[in-house]
Length: 340
Ligand code: NAD
Figure 1 (tube, protein in one colour):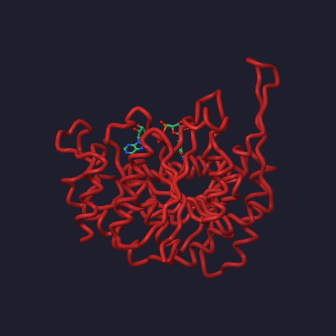
Figure 2 (cartoon, protein in one colour):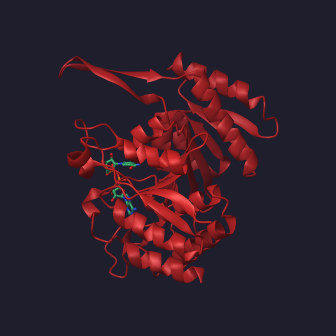
Figure 3 (cartoon, protein in one colour):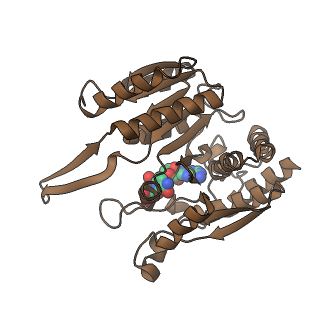
């Protein structure tokens, strides 16, 4: 039977990346019944909101979505659609694997990290206001026992299920004694339930430095929302940049798969940006759907194309203006070809 999946092309470069990914996923032979839904700035006029209820209803009905990035106006304008989807559907775990691939010149060729980011609270709870307009503003950072316990448990369960050896809790409990103090206390309590998985903790600034110098000493990082957002981009940088960094937002029954990167609007419509991050998000989705063989095939094909280095986008070439770089759809074609 076909998997019914909500497909959200997003905006900016999103539609071309999602199209490339859809073609790769269909080339596996797995049957999909796509339920396409629009969200973002372009639907404001029609629905009066960038996130119409129909989109959330579709994800609730289908349980699984593949999503392209959606632009968020900076400083003013509507709130992030991406954050709103995660909060509305209680997709509390943001999973961001960062694994080195042969063919991408990087400092540490054996990086294999997974960032598990808390997705519903912290500074992204969005409770902020002007105290005195233009003079002072205030933001409230929420950390709860409930949300911390479930994200740390998710990290340990993920570690167990995927043969990972170490979970590191990232925090700033030396300064944020109430919020991250609670976070660290709960993380240590949860760790007691998983004696088979090693546990340690790191202060976030030290963690950033350690990831740059000694990433191979780390494995699964479990982070409050903002730290996870920042460190996962750092981890993407370690393995070749945002163009190759996949992600998943997972709740109890629902899951939305999307790349770590944003809509890269300056490249919209140019068939230029790297489809790998969105395709590898599709690989995470295939695994979630139980289609392990198809997932392995796509991942192997992506690795082959990147290792060969001839049919890759500009960001994977030694020089950004390399004339031999191919476009988004041509790289997807090469991945499809490598699957045959
Ligand atoms: P971005 O991720 O769009 O771009 C950052 C840099 O990475 C740019 O230089 C861009 O060209 C490059 N890049 C991104 N994706 C790439 C790809 N697939 N291949 C090659 N290079 C790639 O981040 P930004 O510029 O800070 O944000 C742009 C918009 O995206 C903002 O409105 C932001 O709010 C939004 N955003 C959305 C999501 C999401 O939908 N989940 C996530 C992050 C940012």
